[in-house]
Image (cartoon, rainbow, N blue to C red):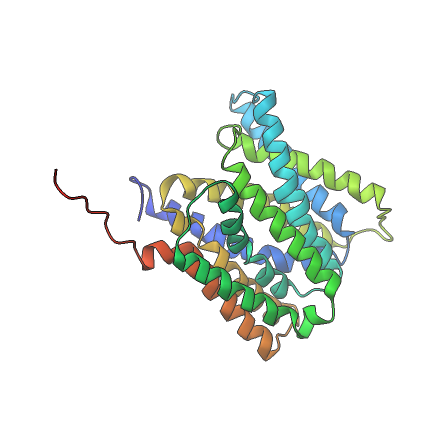
Length: 302
């Protein structure tokens, strides 16, 4: 349900961006790491996106944020983009299929709910049921198939998911720059950190990137970062949280289908089962309070 009057075509476009553009980035990352070292790819992606967005905002007359707000945004950018997305990019470079990476990242809302308890945010029984179901899905996904033979890739994605979840919860409790300025600072910081990490780890281009590599970088920067992030911010302001966060269980399906259709990827029967279990868990966590509303708190008349 819309919180206030909003253009239906704009709403549909924003949902499309979250569902399909963010869902497709996993497959595009896989294409990109065939030409670019992983941290270099991620660093260039966010640095370019941050420069484009910051330039747009400054030309529009927006003011730079305070040092405190900018510092908070920088820390959030490191946790969400540098560690969270960077870990996924490195894992896909380690031959983790893009669809499997997306399924693992779908556990972010489960971890976010656990971290919410640290900040005193109340949770309900149905959300803890979702956590239990999600753990079953994670065990299934890591007990065989692609991740079973690639424990390093599984650990990388797990670290990235935990970092993204904690950064999301912590970021909702602190002062950040208003509007799109927060995203610009986050992307600029993440891009710089990832490029430094790339240099320190000794990443080097062994050959000039292919046309596919440049197209992947451009798509991730413009569509996967600038457009999709702004679409997410629009949805947060105009629709219920349940609709805005529904990308968490749509993205894995999109990523799996793209990987199978165009990337020659395949899933074992156990991985298909894990996909369904994890999506069910995320639905319980994100939609539980709407599917199973709490009984009204009726107070006796005085």
